[in-house]
Image (cartoon, rainbow, N blue to C red; front, top):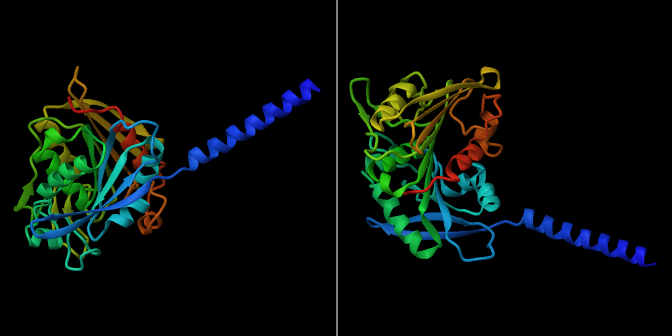
Length: 316
């Protein structure tokens, strides 16, 4: 009788524990809309807060910048960062660029591109710095663990923020973007690498027609712009941050090439992933229209690799 009772108690306890586990792993964070007026424009950011932890410790903050014509909700729902935020316990902020229709067809001013933001000389870099100050007042942000992620036009803004404000960010991720471009090969503007090195993880598809990997004019109908080759632009940033190549690896039977750069003896690295059959999409994205259009067969998941790269990096 005692054995049966003990067995029943054990089974019941196990079922309760499993129930708590299922609730825990399926728990989701919450979204809040944060407004900030900058230069006379009311600007929106969707702030995703992870499930509340057991203490009031400060949390990492990851800014995620949409591509040209994107917005915060699409970015939040399709890039895969939100799900990792819930699992790993960091704040994800999805700011919006500007445009004539307020919440759609938005762009960022990355110095040489793009659209409404560039044409109207919107100071997006300064806006993000002011936004960071306000978010630190409103939320439990660990100021030593603030990170940047940008896709395409959002990647250009990321390059500019890294260049202008390297002291604010612990690491940055660039997907399908460039720090240089112009009206022609003779009119290229380059965002300069920072004097203070910032760890970076970069992804680019070799078949990208929008920002061509090997250089050339963009195929995008929205912008007529010339881009230097991506390896050339990255090499200039590597040299500017006084880094050297550490190793080169071929992954997935040659479908992915990974180059690692750094400063020997220092905790600073740049990881550059070339997706050989990749185009102008977010590697490994499973949601959204871009995911359906991707040409790549690689299994690289940019969102997971980005957080793995960020996780242990902090400002000194």
